Image (tube, rainbow, N blue to C red):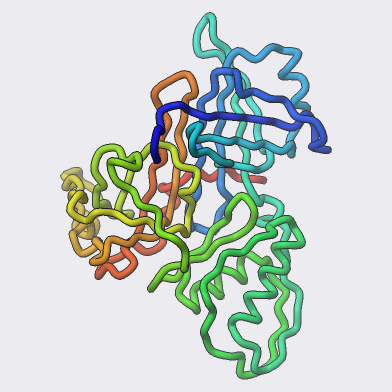
Length: 319
């Protein structure tokens, strides 16, 4: 990422649920944290905008408005979040600074309301089952699906399915060995053994890596300058010689999980290829924060963290 020093930022919030007109907060002081993970939950964004006038604030009239965040650098930027407002609050940090905090999620309608209602004949394969799930998601706005090639057993007899699409996706993922989650436009799934066939993103000190990658219980953690290309399911290329082991945890707790006994060098991939399991964009357009932190799993590593804990991302309930 050459010349990654001049930042690019844009924040727009629709005035109402028709999403036909938007407020542009790009020139305001804004901080944000945008989380995404392969834990079958919507991507979330927590955005704080400072010193907004009462007249402008009044134009954000309720919940459901479209929220779009773009970020990166002048030479390389893109959309890092698109979703719907689910919570709005106001507050004061000091005598001179007020703020409005917006919480938004992507694909919440698909997550809450997409239903698979179909009768499948005997002999239906895994791909056909997944096609029905994708169809249900698309009907509720999750229009894209980035999935691995499906190979699996066929149904020995006919089956009627009437269930939430997310629950059927969980079942198919468990039987086929996948982890899945939501993107701004749809869903993505990555195989437990292998990766999606895409171009690997090279992360090193020349392309914006900060500090050194670290082995943690949740996977290989990498921090770099804000990169809109880093999303769950993507493949990254690391120099294994730069990866260091994490700290040993000496605190008391569950004796079965005492210490970082799983965070070993066996998590390192032999060919330096890793698949992204979680991603957090953190930014302050008036401050120093402007980073992307990912946790990833070695494509052919001997030890993998498996499904990430819900503590690894931010989840906002939609009621």
